[in-house]
Image (cartoon, rainbow, N blue to C red; front, side):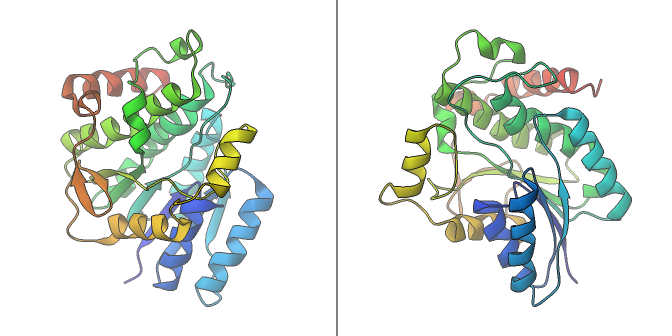
Length: 268
Protein backbone atom coordinates (compact mmCIF):
# COMPACT_ATOMS: atom_id res chain seq x y z
CA UNK A 1 0.00 0.00 0.00
CA UNK A 2 1.34 3.41 -0.97
CA UNK A 3 2.53 5.66 1.84
CA UNK A 4 1.66 9.36 1.97
CA UNK A 5 4.86 11.33 2.51
CA UNK A 6 4.93 15.11 2.96
CA UNK A 7 8.27 16.75 2.15
CA UNK A 8 8.92 20.37 3.07
CA UNK A 9 11.71 22.04 1.14
CA UNK A 10 10.62 19.71 -1.64
CA UNK A 11 11.26 21.98 -4.62
CA UNK A 12 15.03 21.45 -4.82
CA UNK A 13 18.04 19.64 -3.39
CA UNK A 14 17.56 16.82 -0.88
CA UNK A 15 13.77 17.15 -0.72
CA UNK A 16 13.31 16.99 -4.48
CA UNK A 17 15.69 14.04 -4.85
CA UNK A 18 13.85 12.15 -2.10
CA UNK A 19 10.52 12.99 -3.71
CA UNK A 20 11.63 11.54 -7.02
CA UNK A 21 12.88 8.35 -5.39
CA UNK A 22 9.72 7.89 -3.34
CA UNK A 23 7.48 8.54 -6.35
CA UNK A 24 9.44 5.98 -8.36
CA UNK A 25 8.75 3.46 -5.56
CA UNK A 26 5.02 4.13 -5.82
CA UNK A 27 4.54 6.33 -2.76
CA UNK A 28 2.15 9.27 -2.66
CA UNK A 29 4.43 12.31 -2.50
CA UNK A 30 3.31 15.73 -1.29
CA UNK A 31 5.76 18.54 -2.08
CA UNK A 32 5.94 21.78 -0.10
CA UNK A 33 7.97 24.70 -1.48
CA UNK A 34 8.27 28.44 -1.11
CA UNK A 35 9.08 29.56 -4.66
CA UNK A 36 6.21 28.85 -7.09
CA UNK A 37 8.43 28.49 -10.17
CA UNK A 38 10.82 26.03 -8.52
CA UNK A 39 7.90 24.14 -7.03
CA UNK A 40 6.27 23.83 -10.45
CA UNK A 41 9.51 22.50 -11.94
CA UNK A 42 9.84 20.02 -9.07
CA UNK A 43 6.31 18.76 -9.66
CA UNK A 44 7.21 18.02 -13.27
CA UNK A 45 10.28 16.03 -12.24
CA UNK A 46 8.44 14.01 -9.60
CA UNK A 47 5.63 13.34 -12.08
CA UNK A 48 8.14 11.86 -14.50
CA UNK A 49 9.70 9.77 -11.72
CA UNK A 50 6.25 8.53 -10.76
CA UNK A 51 5.45 7.38 -14.29
CA UNK A 52 3.01 10.20 -14.87
CA UNK A 53 1.45 10.27 -11.40
CA UNK A 54 1.77 13.86 -10.27
CA UNK A 55 2.34 14.79 -6.63
CA UNK A 56 0.11 17.00 -4.58
CA UNK A 57 1.90 20.27 -3.95
CA UNK A 58 1.47 23.33 -1.77
CA UNK A 59 3.24 26.65 -1.52
CA UNK A 60 4.23 27.92 1.92
CA UNK A 61 6.80 30.23 3.48
CA UNK A 62 8.12 29.02 6.84
CA UNK A 63 9.18 32.58 7.69
CA UNK A 64 5.48 33.30 8.18
CA UNK A 65 3.74 31.27 10.88
CA UNK A 66 0.32 32.20 9.50
CA UNK A 67 1.42 30.59 6.25
CA UNK A 68 2.41 27.44 8.15
CA UNK A 69 -1.02 27.34 9.79
CA UNK A 70 -2.69 27.76 6.41
CA UNK A 71 -0.57 24.94 5.00
CA UNK A 72 -1.47 22.65 7.90
CA UNK A 73 -5.18 23.34 7.35
CA UNK A 74 -4.83 22.45 3.66
CA UNK A 75 -2.99 19.23 4.43
CA UNK A 76 -5.53 18.21 7.07
CA UNK A 77 -8.33 18.92 4.61
CA UNK A 78 -6.80 16.80 1.83
CA UNK A 79 -4.86 14.03 3.58
CA UNK A 80 -6.77 11.58 5.81
CA UNK A 81 -3.47 9.98 6.85
CA UNK A 82 0.15 11.16 6.78
CA UNK A 83 2.64 8.33 7.07
CA UNK A 84 5.76 10.51 7.02
CA UNK A 85 6.46 14.20 7.51
CA UNK A 86 9.94 15.14 6.30
CA UNK A 87 10.84 18.47 7.91
CA UNK A 88 13.45 19.39 5.34
CA UNK A 89 12.80 23.12 4.75
CA UNK A 90 15.33 25.64 6.01
CA UNK A 91 18.54 27.39 5.16
CA UNK A 92 21.33 29.67 6.27
CA UNK A 93 21.42 33.46 6.00
CA UNK A 94 24.47 35.66 5.68
CA UNK A 95 22.82 38.41 7.75
CA UNK A 96 20.01 38.42 10.30
CA UNK A 97 16.51 39.09 9.06
CA UNK A 98 13.43 39.60 11.19
CA UNK A 99 10.33 37.70 10.14
CA UNK A 100 6.80 39.06 10.25
CA UNK A 101 6.42 37.10 13.50
CA UNK A 102 9.32 38.94 15.14
CA UNK A 103 11.88 36.14 15.12
CA UNK A 104 15.23 35.77 13.40
CA UNK A 105 14.59 34.04 10.07
CA UNK A 106 17.16 31.25 10.51
CA UNK A 107 15.62 29.91 13.72
CA UNK A 108 12.09 30.34 12.40
CA UNK A 109 12.55 28.66 9.02
CA UNK A 110 14.66 25.79 10.37
CA UNK A 111 12.95 25.17 13.71
CA UNK A 112 9.87 27.15 14.72
CA UNK A 113 8.05 26.68 11.40
CA UNK A 114 8.62 22.89 11.30
CA UNK A 115 7.84 22.64 15.02
CA UNK A 116 4.48 24.33 14.47
CA UNK A 117 3.62 22.28 11.38
CA UNK A 118 4.44 18.99 13.12
CA UNK A 119 2.23 19.87 16.09
CA UNK A 120 -0.67 20.87 13.87
CA UNK A 121 -0.40 17.57 11.95
CA UNK A 122 0.23 15.40 15.01
CA UNK A 123 -3.07 13.49 15.01
CA UNK A 124 -2.63 12.51 11.36
CA UNK A 125 0.89 11.29 12.09
CA UNK A 126 -0.16 8.75 14.72
CA UNK A 127 1.60 5.50 13.89
CA UNK A 128 3.76 7.36 11.39
CA UNK A 129 7.11 9.05 11.33
CA UNK A 130 8.78 12.48 11.40
CA UNK A 131 12.21 12.92 9.80
CA UNK A 132 14.08 16.15 10.58
CA UNK A 133 16.95 17.26 8.35
CA UNK A 134 19.62 18.40 10.80
CA UNK A 135 23.36 18.79 10.24
CA UNK A 136 26.77 18.25 11.79
CA UNK A 137 26.80 22.05 11.81
CA UNK A 138 24.81 21.69 15.05
CA UNK A 139 28.19 21.50 16.78
CA UNK A 140 28.68 25.23 16.05
CA UNK A 141 25.76 26.55 18.07
CA UNK A 142 23.53 25.87 21.05
CA UNK A 143 19.91 27.01 20.86
CA UNK A 144 18.54 29.45 23.37
CA UNK A 145 14.98 29.60 24.61
CA UNK A 146 14.41 33.29 23.86
CA UNK A 147 14.27 33.35 20.07
CA UNK A 148 14.41 37.13 19.81
CA UNK A 149 17.93 37.07 21.30
CA UNK A 150 19.37 35.84 18.00
CA UNK A 151 19.86 39.46 16.88
CA UNK A 152 22.18 40.36 19.72
CA UNK A 153 25.24 38.49 18.44
CA UNK A 154 24.26 37.11 15.04
CA UNK A 155 26.73 34.87 13.28
CA UNK A 156 25.39 32.87 10.36
CA UNK A 157 27.11 29.60 11.27
CA UNK A 158 26.45 29.87 14.99
CA UNK A 159 22.79 30.67 14.34
CA UNK A 160 22.46 27.91 11.77
CA UNK A 161 24.17 25.49 14.14
CA UNK A 162 21.78 26.44 16.92
CA UNK A 163 18.82 25.84 14.62
CA UNK A 164 20.17 22.44 13.58
CA UNK A 165 20.72 21.57 17.24
CA UNK A 166 17.07 22.45 17.76
CA UNK A 167 16.12 19.92 15.06
CA UNK A 168 17.97 17.17 16.93
CA UNK A 169 16.53 18.18 20.30
CA UNK A 170 13.03 18.36 18.81
CA UNK A 171 13.30 14.79 17.48
CA UNK A 172 14.55 13.39 20.77
CA UNK A 173 11.95 15.23 22.87
CA UNK A 174 9.16 14.25 20.46
CA UNK A 175 10.17 10.60 20.90
CA UNK A 176 9.73 11.02 24.66
CA UNK A 177 6.44 12.92 24.50
CA UNK A 178 4.87 11.22 21.47
CA UNK A 179 5.72 7.51 21.64
CA UNK A 180 3.09 6.79 18.98
CA UNK A 181 5.14 8.69 16.37
CA UNK A 182 8.70 7.75 15.38
CA UNK A 183 10.84 10.91 15.32
CA UNK A 184 14.42 11.04 14.04
CA UNK A 185 16.98 13.58 12.83
CA UNK A 186 19.93 13.19 10.49
CA UNK A 187 23.01 14.76 8.99
CA UNK A 188 22.66 14.49 5.19
CA UNK A 189 26.31 15.21 4.47
CA UNK A 190 27.60 18.43 2.94
CA UNK A 191 25.33 18.42 -0.08
CA UNK A 192 25.87 20.02 -3.48
CA UNK A 193 22.73 22.19 -3.58
CA UNK A 194 21.48 25.72 -4.16
CA UNK A 195 21.94 26.38 -0.45
CA UNK A 196 22.54 29.43 1.67
CA UNK A 197 22.87 33.09 0.88
CA UNK A 198 25.85 35.22 -0.01
CA UNK A 199 28.31 34.61 -2.83
CA UNK A 200 30.90 32.63 -0.92
CA UNK A 201 28.40 30.27 0.70
CA UNK A 202 26.57 29.60 -2.56
CA UNK A 203 29.85 29.11 -4.42
CA UNK A 204 31.01 26.56 -1.83
CA UNK A 205 27.80 24.51 -1.96
CA UNK A 206 27.88 24.39 -5.73
CA UNK A 207 31.54 23.81 -6.58
CA UNK A 208 33.57 22.57 -3.59
CA UNK A 209 35.12 19.13 -4.14
CA UNK A 210 33.91 16.09 -2.25
CA UNK A 211 30.32 17.24 -1.70
CA UNK A 212 27.51 14.70 -1.42
CA UNK A 213 25.03 14.60 -4.30
CA UNK A 214 21.40 15.51 -3.61
CA UNK A 215 20.49 11.99 -4.82
CA UNK A 216 22.68 10.33 -2.15
CA UNK A 217 21.36 12.60 0.60
CA UNK A 218 17.82 12.06 -0.68
CA UNK A 219 18.35 8.29 -0.50
CA UNK A 220 19.24 8.62 3.18
CA UNK A 221 16.07 10.61 3.82
CA UNK A 222 14.10 7.91 1.98
CA UNK A 223 15.70 5.17 4.10
CA UNK A 224 14.88 7.03 7.32
CA UNK A 225 11.31 7.55 6.11
CA UNK A 226 10.70 3.93 5.19
CA UNK A 227 13.07 1.52 6.97
CA UNK A 228 11.66 -0.61 9.80
CA UNK A 229 15.05 -0.48 11.52
CA UNK A 230 15.00 3.20 12.52
CA UNK A 231 15.47 4.00 16.24
CA UNK A 232 12.96 6.44 17.72
CA UNK A 233 14.57 9.71 18.88
CA UNK A 234 17.95 8.97 17.31
CA UNK A 235 20.30 11.21 15.33
CA UNK A 236 21.73 9.54 12.24
CA UNK A 237 24.87 10.02 10.22
CA UNK A 238 24.70 7.82 7.13
CA UNK A 239 22.53 4.88 8.24
CA UNK A 240 24.10 4.73 11.67
CA UNK A 241 22.92 6.13 14.98
CA UNK A 242 25.41 8.81 16.00
CA UNK A 243 26.10 10.76 19.18
CA UNK A 244 25.45 14.48 18.71
CA UNK A 245 27.26 17.23 20.60
CA UNK A 246 26.59 17.33 24.34
CA UNK A 247 24.19 20.28 24.16
CA UNK A 248 22.16 18.52 21.45
CA UNK A 249 21.54 15.50 23.68
CA UNK A 250 20.73 17.43 26.87
CA UNK A 251 17.24 16.35 28.00
CA UNK A 252 16.75 19.47 30.15
CA UNK A 253 17.53 21.73 27.21
CA UNK A 254 15.26 19.65 24.97
CA UNK A 255 12.36 20.06 27.40
CA UNK A 256 12.99 23.80 27.85
CA UNK A 257 13.27 24.32 24.09
CA UNK A 258 9.98 22.48 23.56
CA UNK A 259 8.14 24.69 26.04
CA UNK A 260 9.69 27.87 24.65
CA UNK A 261 8.75 26.79 21.11
CA UNK A 262 5.16 26.17 22.19
CA UNK A 263 5.02 29.72 23.52
CA UNK A 264 6.70 31.26 20.48
CA UNK A 265 4.37 29.56 18.00
CA UNK A 266 1.21 30.26 19.99
CA UNK A 267 0.50 26.61 20.77
CA UNK A 268 -0.01 27.28 24.48
